[in-house]
Each structure stands twice: as structure tokens, then as C-alpha cells.
Image 1 (spheres, helix red, strand yellow):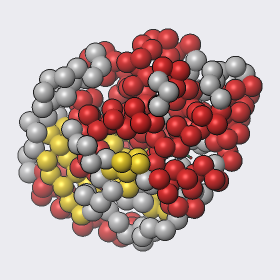
Image 2: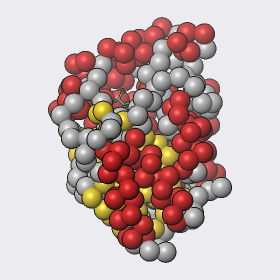
Image 3: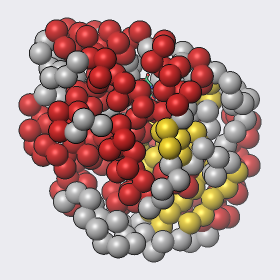
Length: 304
Ligand code: DON
């Protein structure tokens, strides 16, 4: 398979979309970026990397961190997670408050903001320094120590994240946060601010394509069935209320973030990360989604 040629074709084809989208600006620090940026990287299970465009430029991973937080929580708590978080698509925006009230503070899934706050709370109950631990865990997954927080992004979100602050307090009122909301929020904002490139994210996701093990040293991150659970949740909940459209077009488990990154995996074959900061109306990268659709079409490889 000539992955490099396919990436070049995709790069050319998405160009008209780059001008047509808007970057997230509800976190002030995210407003200053050109929607023309585009990068993509593929890591195969044989260890080969292919990349194009801005694939080596760092961006904040935002909600893609929810995959790594869930993985860490599964290692710490196993199935006990599911007493406090659901496993159903929400059909609402990633930061919606409405369902939480009639579902008694139990978030629909770990990939909406409410669910990630509960997952972060679980991690905090085991480890005082939840955000440093998650960063070290991602460095291990990516086999790369050169990954750090973007502290300007973390601070900007802390100063203006009124909706997340409301969500955390609302969940606390139902008794589904054990720690102080401000501590949970501080860890959560740091998780979202972790800055990585497409190439680094493709490495950090490869354990999911490899039955839960790191391919370079065979280290077990999670059991094969847990890797399956995480990918199933990415497929059903990873791109919020456009998850059906994403599954239809791309045909891979994927997780997006509002800075425009999307990480997707093909079991047994590859992990792929695309980045383009211009978003569609549901908060997923417009050109990134198209690029992944083209990638599975041109390679003929998807889970379906
Ligand atoms: O909590 C927030 O609103 C952001 N830090 C992350 C949201 C996000 O990435 C949703 N994804 N599409």
C-alpha cells in the first residue's frame, strides 16, 4: 500500500475545505490560529510512519485526551467505572448540561465533557497529581518524553470555562464527584491542554490497534478486551452528535478534539491522526473528517 501517495492525494483534495471552516474560539487561547493548517500522520503496526503537511506541528489535544484518561481509569478501576458513567451515545453537544439532570448526574459516556470530569475524578482519587500522571502515561504510550502541557491553553480554559465549571458542580450536587470540583477541573483543563503533533498522537494510539500492547516493546497497557471496549466507545461516542455521520463516512473508531485533531485506529493495521483546526457545526474538524473519509476510501481499509 502506497500510504505516502494516498496522503499526498488527500492533502491536495482537502485544500478547498480549509477556507470554509471556523476555528473554536470559546477558549480565547484557541482563537489565534489559521484554519489553513492541515497535517496527517499514519503509523503502521510494522512501525512505519508516513506524514504530510503540518504533521509535526504541536496542537492541544483537547478531547482526544479523554481516550487516554479512560485508558488510565480502566487500569485503576476496571469495570467499577460503569457504576458512575454510561456507555451510550449522548446525541447532544459535548458540553451539554440537559441530560445530566434527568439522568441523576450519571454522564452518558466517558467522551462527553461530563463523563471525562467523572473519569478525571476517579483518577484523582487514586493519584494526587492526576494531570502529571496522565502526561507521563501519554509520554509512555507515544514513546516520547518531549510532550508537555500548553500552560497558556490550560490557564485560558480555567479562566473562561464557565460551562465546565457548571457541569462539575452539577455532577457534584448528585454525589458523582468524590473530590472538590476545582481540583477535578484543574486536572481536566491540564489534560485538554497537552500539546502533541499528529505523528506523536498516532504513536500514542497504536496500542489500540495492537490489542492493548505497545508494539515496540510488547508492554501491556490494557487487556485485549479492554482495548476493544475503548475502540467500541470511540466508534459510538467519539465524535459527539455527529458520531453516526463519522462512522458512515470514515468507518473507523475515532476521537476528536476542538483544536481540530482526530485520532482513529484500524485494528491490526495502523493508527492515523489528522489535524486541521477549522471545525464543523458539531465541533469536529471539517477537513480532518473529510481526510479520514478519503483515507479509508482510497486504501479500501476500514472496520466495515
Ligand atoms: O472542555 C472543553 O470544552 C475543551 N477543553 C475540550 C472539548 C473538546 O475537545 C470537544 N471536542 N470536540
